[in-house]
Image (cartoon, rainbow, N blue to C red; front, side, top):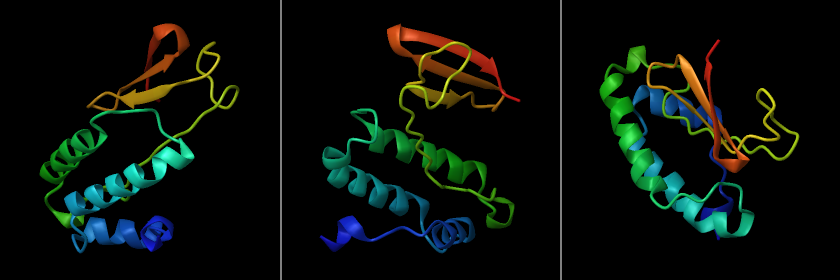
Length: 124
């Protein structure tokens, strides 16, 4: 069970990903394996049938966008999950937010709520 309890220190992991010391695609596979092993017990993420495929595609795109390690952004390759319960996070009258996503150019944010409601907001 060591695999399930071994932490992934953010500062070390980020530095390794940015410098290329840690392969981004290998890292994504490791995280997906951890998610698959832990998620049935902690239920912290929305169900997503092809999460690993999506994350690997996004990681490949990120590698293509930033091939020069010196020009990679500070949180290059860091996976971010936001868990919001009722009353934790609200947007313009939403009782709670189920998911958020940014447009490819980072100018817009789409937020979804219960009842299949979607709002598209301008990112500030």
